Structure formats: structure tokens, C-alpha cells
Length: 165
Image (cartoon, rainbow, N blue to C red; front, side):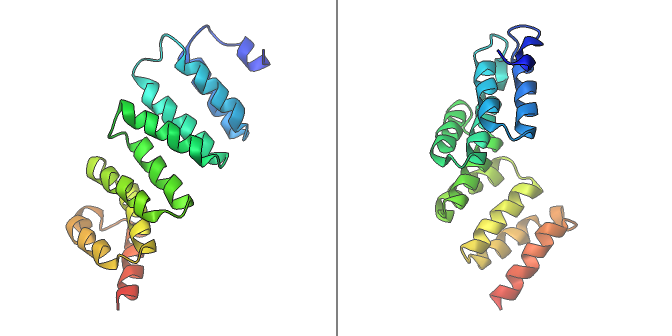
């Protein structure tokens, strides 16, 4: 048993989650995954199951174990088909694997269910990679009033506008 585990307050999911974040910050990803699996087995895990599974997937992504990351993100989507963490994570994995078309499927769903600036930024970056400049401008025309002060989005739009000429 690790010294950190000796200080746990019992079979509590939150204790294991906190410990996993400490391990992650020390880049001990495998150990962090182990703690999150222990959290999943706790009786008090409640509604956090989907987020814990997504965190496991992100750790597998950090280890460049993309197959396991995909498996875990899909497991999270089985619980909540619109989970932003899982949708973002799957898109990120597929970008890393060079499959931007597949990533676009997930990020389309992401911006439809969770329209945040950081999600649109990721969406635009994928569209830009795919040279879908018209789509970027079409979406920007719809959302521009809401995000007109976001410098990262404006940068992508300016870059797109230059490429489109």
C-alpha cells in the first residue's frame, strides 16, 4: 500500500480522485489511472462515473495509448452521449491520429451540445486543418456577435480569411 493511500478517509471516491490528481501532476499517469479505477469501485461514486471515466481516458491519451483512450471515452459516451469531456477527448485523439474527418464528427456534436468559445476554437482548428474555410466563415457569421472579443477565435478567423483569398 502506498503512503498516500494510508491517509485515505475510507472507501471514498473523492479521496481516490484527489490522489489521482496529485499523481497526475507528478506525471505518474499509470498510478493516477489506478486511483481512478479504485474511485469507480467506491459506493459513493454517484453521478461522477462518466467524468471519472473521461479522466481515465485523458490519462491514457497522455500515455499515448490512443486505443485505450478511445475505448474509455466511448464508455463515457455510453453513459452520457453528450458528455463534453468525452466528445472533446475523442476529437483530440482522432486529431492526434491524423483522422481529422472523424474528429470533426465529434467536435460537431460538441459545439452543438456545449457551445463554448474553447470548443469553437477547437472546431475551427480542425476545419482549418481540413481546409474547410467556407465552413469556418459560415459558422463564424452565426456566432460572431457572441464571441467577437475572443482573441483566439479572431486569430483563426483572420488566418482563415487570408487563406480564403
